[in-house]
Length: 251
Image 1 (tube, rainbow, N blue to C red):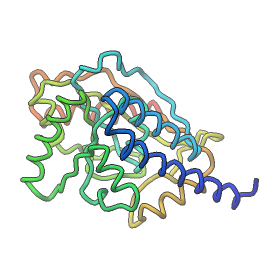
Image 2: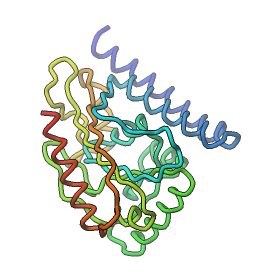
Image 3: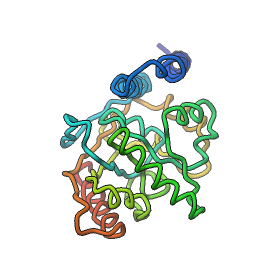
């Protein structure tokens, strides 16, 4: 298959995948229980990554045997692909910047998935975010976010904003620190194609990922961090140290 044919076929498969997502969310979900919804979202995330030529490798273990576990997942942020990767580990309700809700195709899907949108420049939006995250914890047991507040190429981990960790303090839930890195599957060299940085838009970034050689995304999972004895700033600092130190495992 030529490169152009490969790109065309991938776009076609992706189009069908998004049609499937709309069917799941708008037709299947109203008649599904919580467990069926979790399974459907995780399966769709894994299938979408696969058709984009991305394999997930997990280093460490995330115990998902008890769905009642109260948990906050935090990660470094490289790409719009990151939530799909994390969903393959555990179904989570994500926190995202308000702009994502306006993205073509993805925006309506994220809204239907219950993503919590926040305007980071608004104190009232931040307070509402914590309330919404607490409600999501009560309903689903796991929320996730990217405390750097922006994406990067993935060489380093930016400082973590503390707001996201308020929900762990308020709900006494454990924090799991995740570290992601995308690599060329053949050479194992770090891949920059998924990096959602600079002025690139979503559609341009999607095209770049589709045209990229097959990739593997490695994800390191920390041991649970208990919030006992921490305030949100000290918890954010500890999680940042974990994510940064785990990055060295992926060199």
